[in-house]
Image 1 (cartoon, one colour):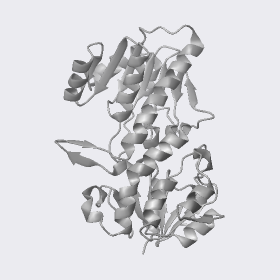
Image 2 (tube, one colour):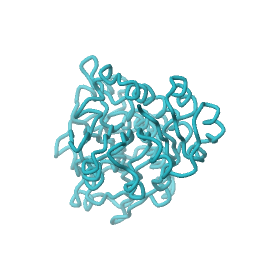
Image 3 (cartoon, helix red, strand yellow):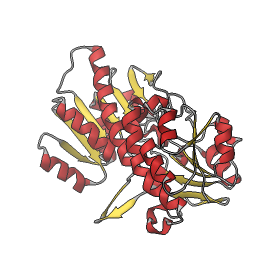
Image 4 (spheres, helix red, strand yellow):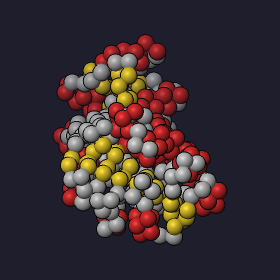
Length: 344
């Protein structure tokens, strides 16, 4: 029998909670026991009383959560302080991003932990695929990254709306960033992606957009002259390709801005490394590279609601042993590790 635990997130500047009270109620109504750490939802405006009213049991410490529960529902990957609390009895459902954290992956394999990763749950439908959990967070990340880039531009001088905006990857994050740029009346928006049919469809909807297939020549030329680059490339479960090399960075003009949304997967530049909301920028030869791993935490209430709403059906399926109804939870898909085996 699964007993659910919702710990308070330990990652720096993480403000979200994985399950909101309305979705906890769906679990307790099915007689599934849910433990929530005290004040785990306070930064997202959810009080302990809200969880008590939903039928949850409040625990005072993270140690108690991991001791009482065998199904841990989180937002971000376990932090170092949690490693000693995790063992083979646990199933963990969260954003793991194992591709950029081999130490964490090895720990989960060694301890025979069952790990389901939000970011690798992929659904194939009508000849295309989408990520039902990742997409909601990606939209927030794309919008916020473009807004932050515009704010950085305004720190220099009067904004030139003819400045080149380059969006690398037109998934949910890239499209969200593109829409913000269009709404702000930027006129030189360039899209670069390996799926050229998708680019054509986007251009058909807005003739102002400039589209380019993903080639080395296109990448080099566009990066060199861009004022803002939104790095939103995502490869399912894999480390992000270092598309922007040191040589390319050296050819960019001072004052350029790179918003590296792919930092959770290792980042797209040779200089990228995880930073924080409080200290987001890497300065390199006058170029600003923003590398914030958990951008949606800047909007904790909205992001928590979207995340919880997108995972609750999977939480119920796992608790009720109905995972066969959701092939996207299978080994090598949502299921990343089990009983000492790795499927990614």
